[in-house]
Every structure is written in structure tokens, then in C-alpha cells.
Image 1 (cartoon, rainbow, N blue to C red):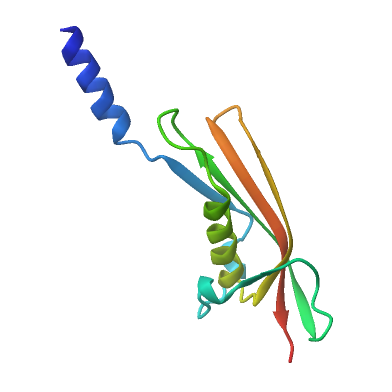
Image 2: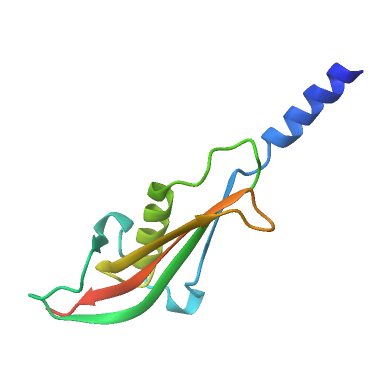
Length: 120
């Protein structure tokens, strides 16, 4: 009976999603046609090109169970690029990362920056 309980527990837990991504992008801000791969990360605002600030972009990757790996910087980077592309950004500037354990998660990693679009 104990063995059956352990097997059933493992099966039930393994079906759970392991990560959840959240962002601050509202549906009315979404612009189609950009690929996440086309969005670049910059350490500072470009000095040799004109640009418009589109606004802040922030994402949070949350680990939902204890059995999965902690969220990674590459997962946050991919989510930031996807959110930036959804509002037509060419780049995201001044990215900041934060990680920890939350009240409703086994761990999280947040990323935020400013989305910009080139004007020239």
C-alpha cells in the first residue's frame, strides 16, 4: 500500500507545470510581426542611433514545485525578448535581475529593463 501511495504521488506531481512566466505587458500593447530573436540586449542607451522609449518590460519566471530546477537567467532572457518583441521593441536596455523564494513559489527569477525602438 505504501508503495502504491509513493507511485501515485510521483505520477500526480510529475504532471504539474514546472514553471510559470508572468509579464507586465497588457494585451492592448501587443504589436505583431517581431521575432523574439531580433530583440537585442544593451548595457546602455545607444549613442549613435535615434530611438523611442516604449516603456518598462518586466517578467517573472516562477518555479512551481520543489522537484524542478531553479529558474535560470536564460529563461528570463528569453521571456524578456518575447515580451519586448510583442510591443515592437528592437532592444532592451539596462536589464536588472532579481531572484529568491516567494510565498507561493519554490523560487523565482525576475528580469526588467526598458524597451526601445530605433527611429532611424
